[in-house]
Image 1 (cartoon, one colour):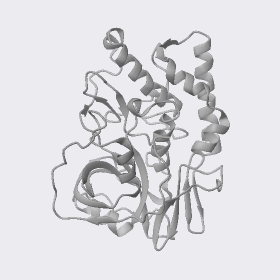
Image 2 (cartoon, one colour; image 1 turned 30 degrees about the horizontal axis):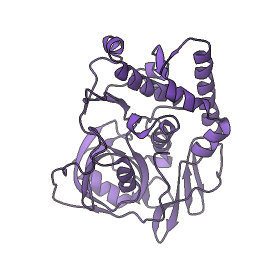
Image 3 (tube, one colour; image 1 turned 120 degrees about the vertical axis):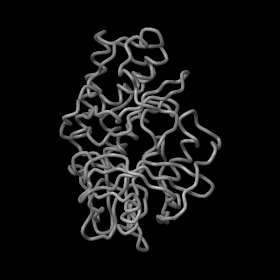
Image 4 (tube, one colour; image 1 turned 45 degrees about the vertical axis):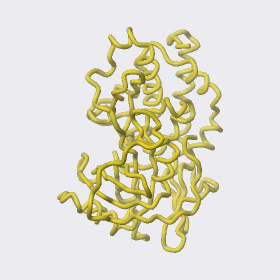
Length: 332
């Protein structure tokens, strides 16, 4: 996995008045990440966060996201900040799907090949979440508690990348013919969108790195995927659209069993109420494989359901059968 389990750090989220410019890169991962991936994950999952600036991003009421500048220690970073709705399982606002997409890619891609930015789920007091989004002057209804019994809101946090833009053409057929690196990286992106059944090709959901030497395509909005209803804005990237895919990615997919997927994706994150705060803890046994959002006493689990995992496994099997039948070629 690209992320490892965090231990019992209570969330601290301070709303500040002043905004500061983003800090210079420190130990940069590459052109798109100003910090190493592991450090970004740590900050998103357990860091003490101070809000410096907030701007509306996009979305309709109930699925509104925000671009938030945060400070954590010596680091300043921007994130997509997406408060969950009631129950945390609404159309186009399912935090568990965002986290699942991030974790699924780690099953067959290395960090430098990743196509979903670091993503985490935190639980913050609802008053803090309301104060954060209120700074935008947004007329949308204020966030509500995710669950009636606790005054908190689940929030999906996703690292906001640098040096990316909307692609002019997706796919760029001419570049596929001329640039094998682009073809390989676009293929990795397509494998992910196919495996998770990405069903919303709306402009802005996919962005491309401007690094000419490593032109990755990223999927930055994955809330309409897996068993979600379809979007009216296009579903073409839930299909396999290229002729060739990286042999390394296909080989890693061959090594995945249904049991592997169940173990890795059945419980994506577990939060437990301790000393008045929900903190991430080591996942325990799946409370209910038939549900994606599970609650028991002072514990919350988010994960993929048994049926979602089985459907994903069938898509992987179908892909491998087509590769073996010669329908798709492999890039060495």
